[in-house]
Amino acid sequence: MAKARKGFSRADRIAEQIQRELAELVRTGLKDPRVGWITITAVQVTRDYSHAKVFYTVMDEKTREVSQEALEHSAGFLRSELGRSIKMFTTPQLHFVYDESVSRGMHMTSLINQVAKEDAEKFGAGDAEAADDEGGAE
Image 1 (cartoon, rainbow, N blue to C red):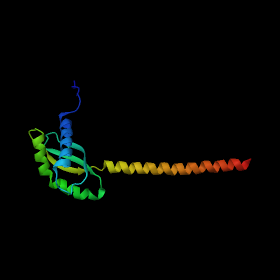
Image 2 (cartoon, rainbow, N blue to C red; image 1 turned 45 degrees about the horizontal axis):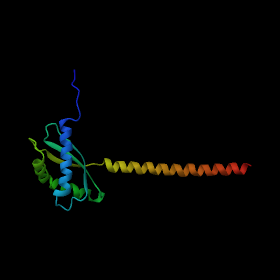
Image 3 (tube, rainbow, N blue to C red; image 1 turned 90 degrees about the horizontal axis):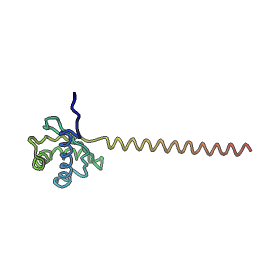
Image 4 (cartoon, rainbow, N blue to C red; image 1 turned 60 degrees about the vertical axis):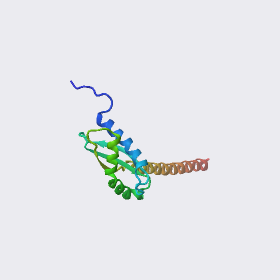
């Protein structure tokens, strides 16, 4: 019989802790001006805790590539600082991946808003034409 799992797994808790620590380190510890406004959206840790995918977004889409280079350049520094703040047997190697889900979500929202606006114009104009037809029939 399978044992029921309570709460999050250890890997999930470690990933959340790494996310919090990295967000603080990027905000206060990095002096690289290329980094800019970065938000750490998620962290995925391998089962053996040797690697971590760090998902991030940037405020300005134009600085995406420069921010990626800056993060990759500072990965060693961030890993060493992470090792000081989180007591683990192995501090994972950091791999930075741009999180496109936020921009994809914004694009989907704009498409939905556009369709809603077109429907409102289409059906709003249809109601006005129907009122004209009814008024002309009397």
